[in-house]
Image (tube, rainbow, N blue to C red; front, side):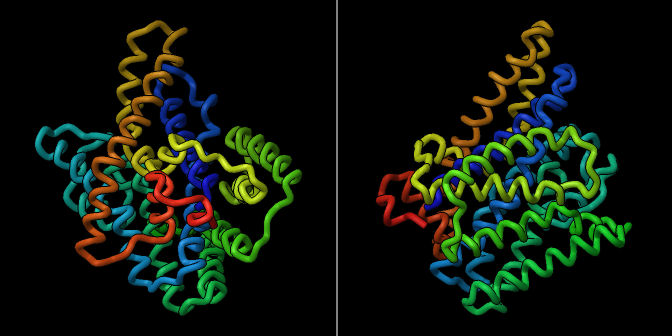
Amino acid sequence: MLYNLQVLRALAALMVVFVHIGAIEHLHADRMFRFGHTGVDIFFLISGFVMVHSIWKKPVTAGNFVANRITRIVPLYWALTMGIFAVALLFGYPLMQASLPTWPEFWKSLLFIPFLRPDGNVQPIFFLGWTLNMEMAFYALFAACVAFGKGSLDRTIWPCVTVIVTIAVLGAVLQPADVALKFYSSPIILQFALGMVMALAYARGMVIPAGASWVLLFVSAAFMAIYPHLRIGFHNAWLLPATGAFVGSVISLERHGWAIQNKFILLLGAASYALYLFHPFATAAADRVSAKVGNFAALPVAILFAVPVAVILAILIHWAFERPVGNLLRRLTHNAPSVVDRQESAVLAGEASEEKVSG
């Protein structure tokens, strides 16, 4: 498997955690942790890469691809959405949003349909689900391209990339007022396309030289750190070279023998989806805990509380819910796990050698 890609998943999720630590009002740390906003861009780029990587050596049908994505994404997100809605319904107390959710918002959230909330945000009941709305639309497009490509990487990838780029360009030029059109044409979708192209290049044996990889790694990381503080138009499109260089250099370094294989970090990468979804509960608790100490100690207390709690919670949810439910659904539907999922499970269980799961 690509060990460093798992590390990037863990890193991207932790970056988002720091964004929401910075959002704690009394800490006044928003500017300090703005670098974390690029974590979502990295997630989307990795999604594009992994989708191609998952069909590279073993082509799958569109149906198998969709089933694997639903098994991976839907159970945990639906459980969380239903829990948040149940609390609001039973106790009249909204979680994760300013107003009480309605039944239409509930169904739209479950069906990954974007809508405008009363607070002016295009977000589902669980606010972080906006990224999943984009992910599911991308999966649907990619599945259609898999069916069209009939086992050919080029016939699968290039039509998908062309559609994504066309949508992003039209969105930038036409500036649609419709909520769904504006949402789906955001320039951040270009990260999906970039990830797919990078995966194709990787499959063709293209890697960045080791020396250049180290340079690109540090330069791109520095740019991503300062980018949120810059006033640059066409948001996210300017991040493409940086995220591409960052992820590309990390993946290339693995080909040159620089792979991080620490089991805990790999486990955190596997649990990155749970970390992404459930960390707001840890940061919300950190808000209350840090408010009880002096201003000088509030920020370190918030970090030292939120990060470990979020990580432990994510790992527990991954082992107790995500993995068993995913395995159960695959058995019930007679659907084999994707190549990436099998490699991930094998490495974490220590059941396969590096040679057997590489690539």
